[in-house]
Length: 192
Image 1: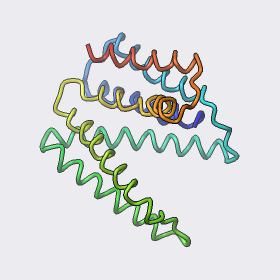
Image 2: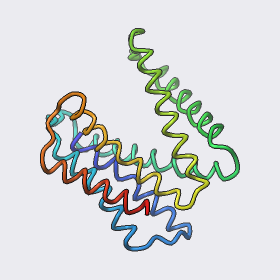
Image 3: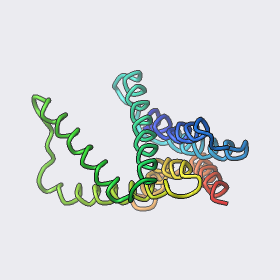
Image 4: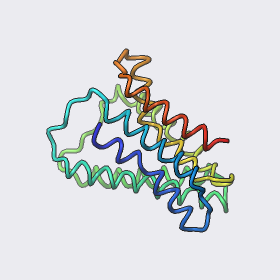
């Protein structure tokens, strides 16, 4: 987590960079707020208590970069699509494509890992919550500064750790709380 979360959570830089590339004026103070968000999320993740992985760090970094690009591409294309249509059909199409791709990956495996039936309801709830979150980000495509929805979405790592602290009673260090404060200071600044 401490290696991959900051890399994956950096996808808003791509989103805002893409907006700037396409002519959206991004002020210096907005870039600073984005850096606060990404830096805060990274700080919370880096200071987590999780053990180091035994796997290849290079492989983890590559997959994290792929994930960051995937988030960016999903949000950029989805928000662009909402300019010509409603966000619900856009979300439906994106989820259907994800299911097809996942099915293709499962079919290529010699020993696919299918979750136990008892876990399906929980996975269904997770899917519904994911679809709701994605449709909220897609609907931002019709608003001013839609790229900032991606910045707000990048807080998932910090929010996950806060929820683990709240419900699972996991320990939060002072440095992690500073990261949380930086993250939400940046989000708050972008919201005004």
